Image (cartoon, rainbow, N blue to C red; front, side, top):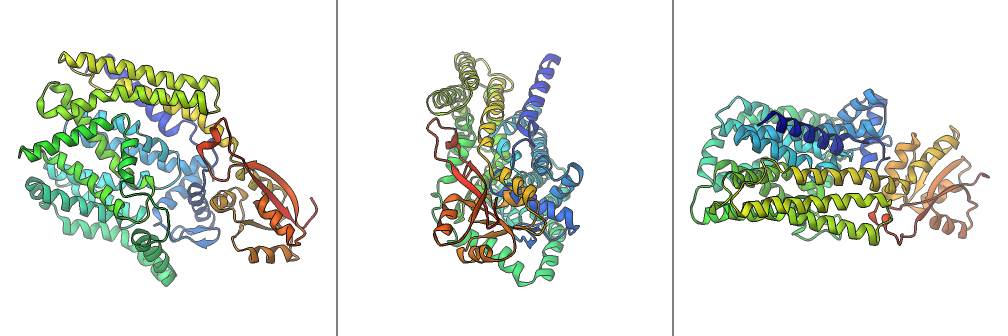
Length: 554
């Protein structure tokens, strides 16, 4: 690679990683509801010095294992209890995941494939969203996929010593999100062993028994500690409610259809969706013809199938649950891009070649669609139109470069520069234009700060049916709050002689007043009931009215 090309690559990678992971990372207040819940748990861990048992609002929090909370707590010790500290953990985990993906691709295929895969992952919507959302998914993926990558390199590249670091990484994943790390890795092993005799031979040559014991030895002590400290309460909540019933029960209604995760992956891989679908078609056709499909390819598809299959079977679905499939899919896209570049007219890459030809047109469609919504539907600054224009132009240029030159048998660029620059512009536009517009309507943090300033030390703080905003209110008020959902409990608070301040919606306040409770509004703000892109529409949804009430005069 020429020096100038290396310099351009370094500039693009640095700009992409900085904008996607770190630019204005700590500026927005917490999004509802999970960010603030995790951040408050970490802050209480830091404040109390109890680093092994997570608490939220001074009550035990059993939903997830302890490692993510501990890391957030350490970040808060360094940076203070801020949004930046809470989000630095997922952002740094994403940086590690990008590096691991690039290393894995370079070690098993080529340097170009590794770099391309890392860049594709850095430019993916999943990385952009989850790196800026203070929850554990990027850390979990970095640990679990990192462990799987180390095991794969140990098996495929005759580096058996790497497997031990892989088992440690998988055990770390268990401490982040629980035994699902074992399940996904085990399913991948089973699927790959069924599909490929070579994969079965190589993988089973590793020391899985000792490795499993090592991973268990790393993760088990915390679970034993929690069982000894909290007993049946921990078992009932963590084991049954947050794992077994969440996976197999009917705890939540209106869940997505079985094809939900295929839609998420199709949208999340844009504009590379056609490329990965084409690669899948090529591999399926090769298997049907009994042609060789290399073991690495089978491992990547097995990893994807294990994740998508497992979470599709779950009765509770959230879009980010399949994020751990992203590194494998980016590696498949990078291999497809590299193979088409190496032999543009090869018949056995016909599907990937067709998908590569679709990258530019898909960018054009995305740019035109964003432009239409920006002009016709969204209320954003006029300068925001530069974003869809840039995406559309980039798509048109890439279409010309790949489609016109490609028909003559000439190779596409070494790296997908044009598409990556377009995505970089898109993410910068979201940070500059969209996030501030949403932030303007998030008023619960301001309401909580008002209460924190105006409430006396002996004033009881409460919320009534604040639902998704409860964690944000608790974090920003900075003291214990009674999170009330039962109207009878609320009435007991209102009739108590002890002074209080309670945050609720104005409609609830009016209902209590209609029942004869002498409540007074101390403070009022209009804002979002739940964070929604609809707030950006020109025809805005009616805002919710939040009030701080008391029986004391304003």
